[in-house]
Image 1 (cartoon, one colour):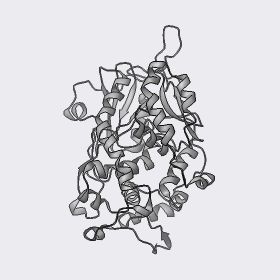
Image 2: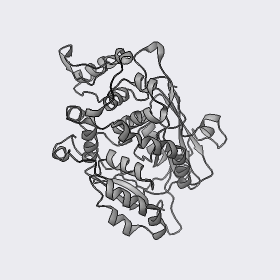
Image 3: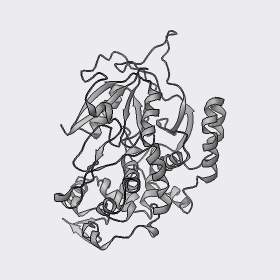
Image 4: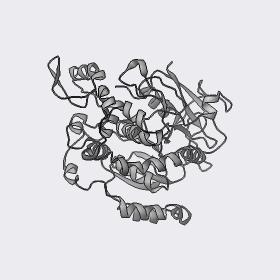
Length: 397
């Protein structure tokens, strides 16, 4: 096994995955196992019980990333990572690590500039299969930053370079999770701004995205069965603020932090803030008081699509992803053999939420291992689950 991925079972019977980008995915145990098995087939899956609620788990997990997340968000403007015209410049000592160039042809296949030389074979193979692959984490990180990852690691501290790797992971995987990725990466990467195109494509693949204050699904017991109340009806999770798709899929929860909210809204392609009035009316006064100032900030500053309005008229998907219903009743599930106790090994109890991730550098003899704590509550996340250690690229093609 390459490592171990954990599903957290909270005291109120909710199953969750704490991801290494600070996000938390909620679902039935079977759904979470399917997500992990699909994304990390070489990892052992374990279930750990916790003596606190699902809301407390989200709060505890987010808290680990608040400080670095807030600081890192402020680097966006400083480093202008969404503006190709102001990208960082490759320093001479790192030019040897630049693996992208134009004019390459392999087996009669024209290679896009973004493909790294170290991953040519996987791209060629995918084209021959009739399904050209999307960028991997290294390729997308270098596209966003404009410099090799070796230069990021060698010239910045973690609070700076993690901004690039985090954004790459979110664009490629975090907004997808267990959903079907119907985005057309050939069209995205051929556009004038692949980052903006990927965010618009994410909205398109969910049939449009907006924000809603609602329940995220049914509560489940320790085995993943839907909890039925005394009235014979399934018990819903308490309402929270979620990004939802036009196809009905609940995608991710939003915390009361203006920087993080704006970033997640953009990554999921939420076009504007017209939803604020509706959710404000739906929220109880005590909940609204936590979000009111955040809503004011976001409503006055959120406008990431300036200069890119015409791209909303382009099609960047093969269709809308299938609806994933969080309100399906699950029953008849037995105790999982992988279920553990609350006193397991040090990794799962002391380091939950922190992952040693590595983007493999061009020089295989000098692979640099680095800790990448990242942020935001991403329920649809496909970033690395917490408590894993990797010695290779955290996302492989």
